[in-house]
Image (cartoon, rainbow, N blue to C red; front, top):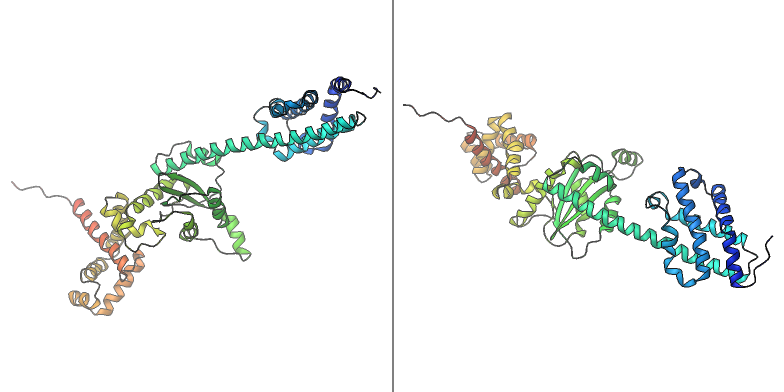
Length: 404
């Protein structure tokens, strides 16, 4: 056994002599005590071994010159490939440091009190250095994720989705499944993105967040439907509608209008909901008493007047065409009711029927299209649909050729 070194120079020479022995003992201890190390592929184990060896070599250099502390992270973690940070967690790295320090302490316990104190101080510095390395990696990943998320939201808003969109969404860790809806409002002065995500997760939803100028855009997706069904089966709260989710996310927006687009089957089709929400947000101020949030379909008249083709098509295909196909009697009754200021008696006189007949037909209108003509706001939507639908009929009607 080597004699105990007495001076710092002797201790330093002794450490350099046993550095290889310490590295070998460390790798053996890693295999014996850390199961995750043994489960790693050979290339990753080799990289972890390089980190351990670099730590021992760096300690020897640091013991020679403690002023080299700022270079610890570069000396130790620079030996490992960048991919190691993705496969080895911070907790596992700290376990690696602990094992390495224990091996070194056991081997140099006869080296004197100054050497043991140096080991403890160095282990503290290397732990802080490891935390700094992982924090920087997390920060860089966070910035990259933020840029990628902004790119995905821009693609959704512009409708310029390409084949790479699903992979980009997957890279963001999107947990939504099934239907998606887009919520558009004013961005607050200070947006806490993490708070918004936590609120969405609490409602079993996921969100993609985008800020464009003074607008805040949330792409909302439902959580795993199987998980929701399991929770409902054990008596937890039922799944929230998109409007209920939007209402609970409302405090995270700035002042002004908040518009929710219609639900679409999946995230790839979210541009359709986004277009409706953006069109509604642009004209929401035209409805003096618009609720917050408001559904984009409740702004169909304003959107149609502003030239939104999607609103015009929605009015025609969801209101006018179904009534026209179901019964011209219902369509005529609705026309008369709205033209007569929603008066049952005036409508009955025009149609030569009893007011109860008018009331019955209006009930059937509501059953067919889902809108109630007796409400002031819905009456405006229905009258807009009738006007635009009749205009489309005129445009589609075949034109007669002039006779010679």
